[in-house]
Structures are given as C-alpha cells and as structure tokens.
Length: 288
Image (cartoon, rainbow, N blue to C red; front, side):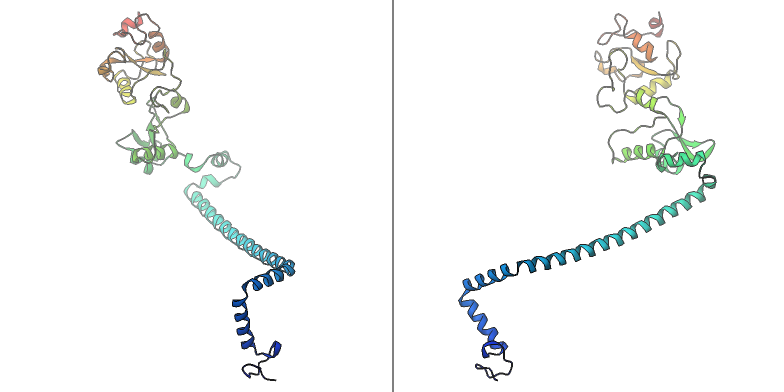
C-alpha cells in the first residue's frame, strides 16, 4: 500500500508515510499551540510516576558514581600522604639515628608531643637575624643557633617558630615585633610585650617603662644591676626627671636609672618622687 500523499512505501498511521506524517504534525502544532500544550500536560500527568522513577534512578546512579570517584580520590590522597610521611621519617632517621633507637624512649615521646617547628632553630635560618638581633652559634653545637633574650639579656636557644615570626616582622609580612624571649616569665615581665601605648596590666606604682631600645642601653650602662641593691632581676628603667613633665629628655640615657621592681615601686611611693612630680636624681639619695 502506497502513501496517499506522496506515493511512498514507508507507510505509518492513517495511510501516510513517516515523512508526510511528521510534516502534517508540525503544521498542526503551529496552527493549534493551545491544544498541543493541553495534550502535553495531560500526557505528563498520566505518566508522572514513570518520570519520577526515571529521575530517581538517574540521580542514584549519579550519586553512586560521584561517591565512587570521591573514594578513589581519597584513597589516592591517603597513599600520597603516607608516602610523604614515610619519606620525612626516613629523612629524620638519617639526620638523627638516636631518635629511632627505641619507640618508647623519652626522646621519642618528647618528639611526638611537640610540632617540628618548636624544635631548636638551626643557624642556617637564624643567620638572617645577624645585624638585627644578637645571634651566634651554640658553643656546644655549631649547627644550632643561640640568641639573647630581649628582657634578661641571657643567651638561649630560640625555637624555629620564634625566629620565623621575628623574620616575618622584619620583612613586613607580620605585625607587631615578635621579640625573642628565653621564657614565658621574661615575656610576661617585659613591659613592651603585646602592648600598644601602656604596658599590659599597667599600674602607676610599678609598671611605667620606656622604649625597649633605650631600656637596653640603660641596663648595659648599669651592668644589668639595680643601682640600689644590686639585684639582677626583674629590672625596670626608672626616669629621674618625670616623663610627663619634660618629654624632651624622656629618651635621654642620662635621665634614666636601672632599678629592680621592688625598689622601683618603693621610689614612686616616696614623697616628691611620685608620678607627675620631679624625681630624685642620685641613687645614693634614693637609698637614704
């Protein structure tokens, strides 16, 4: 049976070939768009459950493939991390064989208890501080660095964290000063640590201090000793002429005196030597 319109052999419904039926349908849709939308809506409502089921199967398949790829990527990252850890372990073993003699040794427990950059800093890293801070090789180990404490002026072994923070401040990539302190006690006692204008925990009787560079110059002049009792710690830099009364000589070394904390408090409790008043000028007068 041939197509009634074009005479073709590819017969479909209603005696028309597929090409003629498709052309007829396109022409009908262009003339009856409202009927086409109503027909599509009715069709989708009739097959709603089938559509939802198809979407659910597609989503589950996508989720399964995604989880599989994530697991593969996690396994690859874990293998890479384990390889890096093993390589670092071998390098540490080669650098310090005594470290791996016994897994239960006290040295191993200390190693595990602290991060690697809290270990003593090498001279290779600390050499960049030469000319800025007092740095030298450790007399017992030339590969380890020693630095002077910014408060008590003692030589100690700084950690890698301390040196790197100090270098970042010098390079301008970190705010603050990050001065080198040998202990938490020196850090807390230093009047310029973590301060903006006044010392932390400022008290009029004991804590008013000066610029850290001036303070160090005064301490070096007085041989790091209290000029009344000879104590070496804790030390304060005392203004002879009141700081607020004469700011011109506030940073004058000759206007400053090294006192211990107790005598600094005692001096400012004397009549005529309190803040905003003229100070006594001679250490002999202060002792009397």
